[in-house]
Length: 216
Image (tube, rainbow, N blue to C red; front, side, top):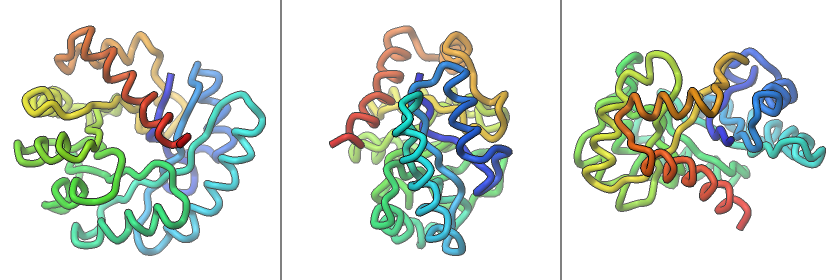
């Protein structure tokens, strides 16, 4: 199992990175990305520390930890520059906090994110056809989330992704230990969003593809 969207105490998670990784390992995960919320105020503070601890966690061999960020609630005009800065600072996974229907994310965030150098658009809410097409065209993964609230629009995201052949990925958006779901529950949530067994299998393979890309 792979989870590429988690949070530690460096943003609004409840655990230090070492315990976050241990909880993931105990829950059966082989890879996780620590992707704390960033904006202009903290990206240069958080990323070096996440990179250091991910290296320490990974070298022990129990679980692989990837350093990343989730660019969150920033003005859409700043997303591209922040994504570029994250890459320069060493982020392996770059996520943008999409236009979930349960938070007042600035309008235009999804579109700006999909024009930037990112890997995943998290919980994109009421994704438009233009956005889904752009995600497919640029190879950016659209997130199906297990997180309460954000998951309310999973079905719509699946419909848009299917229509435009955009790639999907399933993440937990972990903030507390109980957010790590089992593989059985992940499948149930995916089916609840309208995915069939073949599409679910492809979605899980997409997580592996991202991890393999990071290896290159």
